Image 1 (cartoon, rainbow, N blue to C red):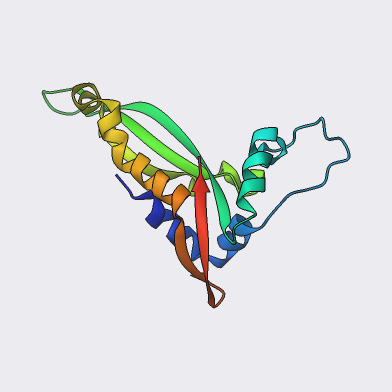
Image 2: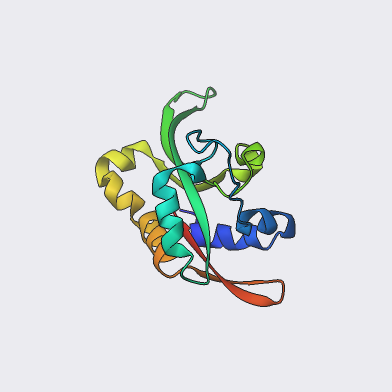
Length: 154
């Protein structure tokens, strides 16, 4: 497990990224019935309305899961190793940068046999704990000479 809070804190230390991540990019649209971004949806607008009452910045996190198989073709034991992998990206980035590999971050990797034996709930527990902490308490990050609170929502 790679702590998601530490990764976000490191991302916010990169000036080029932090200005995009914390920038409010609400664009007025002349056609409100057209959804161009996740921020145009009704649910996210309700969440943002509740957030703006507090002096915090909000990051929107998108989680991905994937299963992959790794094999060692050399040697007598040609066994396939199946893995469960969880990645995240920050939706606050401009859509042009969101899908770049450098902006998709690994947060959890587990052998699939561990998932079957221990259960997905147990393996995801540290990630869910960190996400709850980020949502409820946020991170204190020093930026441009002042300390800012940054929260995250999935």
